[in-house]
Image 1 (cartoon, one colour):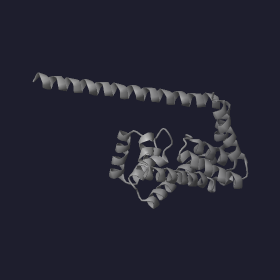
Image 2 (cartoon, rainbow, N blue to C red):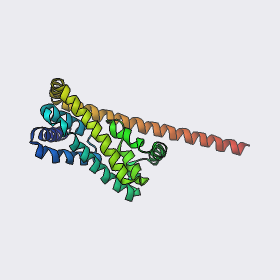
Image 3 (tube, helix red, strand yellow):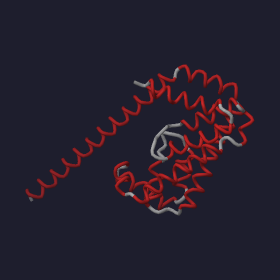
Length: 222
């Protein structure tokens, strides 16, 4: 079942890593756009950036800019959709979670974007992008914050790949030989997370209903 996902991932990663930079750059931007807009490709940008710089050390100076640019474009697409479509927001995110993120924005401002843009998964990020659109956060400031944070993130990966090139290449070879198990583990963890979340919500709702019933019963008794 995972064969097509694994093969697609390996094909895209190998293509971006091995082709000349004038082909790799637009491909990397395109992958960044997909990852930061309507699709979710967890850590694909990070992996490809590391692999590219490890195999082409001279590109450490400029290649991390390409996933950063793609991420900004993808975030702007998601931002515009969220700004214009309340139905899209409600379909993708629970209103309570969105309200919590909006409160973080009101309290922390730009820092509400910086931290999730800097950190890799499992730190949630797209809900902060959607909330920025829903709150009509200034678009120029939004794009600037995302660009700076993403650039820092990908340059950190690039520098690590540059200074620890041999170790990174060894790890990438190990990753390639165990990619099916890794994808299977990720999907399993995601499924367990969804099941645990569903059980938690169901238990909390049952507890709320029980408390409400007790209060109603007490009021009738009184």
